[in-house]
Structure formats: structure tokens, C-alpha cells
Length: 219
Image (cartoon, rainbow, N blue to C red; front, side):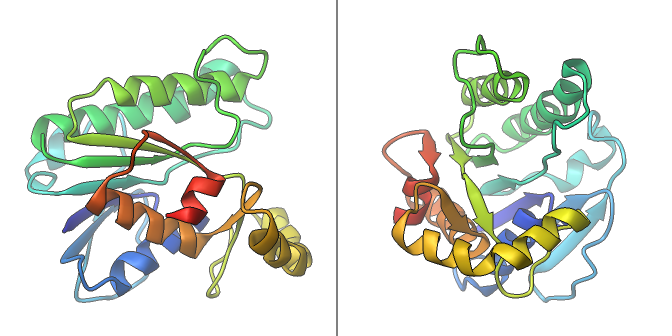
């Protein structure tokens, strides 16, 4: 399986990249991002690209892939709805629309978030935007598309959040997160579980298009 990965330098993306490089069934990984990952591996190739609303300059390098794992994301804290929608919905759909045209047999897996609002009508701004993004992705002509809605995510294997106060919180809460992951997968999953579940779903499918945290753990 040949994979494109967006967001490989973020906390979730780091975990997904790790699992992709470890999985013997994945032939190659193309990481597309604004900055390099700093990693070197025989299966890994990278494209540094600035304009995430226009991929025409690199289209020739985006064809021939079996799956896309889209892990880009930003916090909505302090953002207007217009800005958050641009950073979340518009960028995601620009990439996905291009990929669906170039790779009609592709499986697209998107990291969204627990509580995303599929009605697009709720009171929570971020949930409405995430819900619209999910809905619009599911309309694209991919072989299949899956929305991953993790709740809390525990970083493993030395993976760190780029946001300092997030990382500090993860360090302090690590023992509690480990316990919750075991007894309450509805609320906590891990970067390893997310990565493995993405690969499994891309390879074998899943009965429903939206996977909550407990589904991710089960996969």
C-alpha cells in the first residue's frame, strides 16, 4: 500500500508516520507538509509545500496512491469561525478534492474530533466546522472515506506535541491517561492505536464511515 500523509510533524501525524514506517504492508509514504519531518527512512519521501489551497504545482507527484491519512489540524481557541473554517474545512477539501481526482481508488482517512456536529447546526463553532468538513469529504468520489473522531489522545514512543502547554499536560497526566486507555477507551486512545487503526481501515475497510474513540481502539 502506498500512502500520502498530511500533518506528519504534528503529534497525531508523528504517531501515524511511525506506524506506517513499521508496517511491512506499507510500501512507501509520501509526507506533504510545510516543514520537513527531520526523519530519514527508506520508505519515506517528503514534499515541502506552502500553498495548501492549490496543489497544481505538485499534482504530478500526488497520483498512484492507495490511501491518504489527513492529520492536519489546529485548535479553534481564539479563532473566528471564518478563520477556523479556512484552516480546517477549506484546506482539507482542497487537498481531498485534488486527491480524489488523481486517485479514484484511494481511501481517505481524516482525523476530526469527538463531538463533531454532523448536523452543522449546533451551538459549538468548532463542532459545526468539523461536521461540515466530514460531510463534504464523504461526498467526494473516493473508494471510501473514514472520519476518525478520537477523544483524548496519549502520545507514546517519545512523540511530543508542538504546543508546549499541551505537552506539559500530557507529561503530568500520563499515568491517568494510561489507565483510562485501558478501562475507558471511549475517552482516551493513543497515537499508536490511531496509526494502526488508520492502516487497518484503509486496508480492510470498516462497517461505518465515522469511527469514535472506542471504534478506533477496537480496530
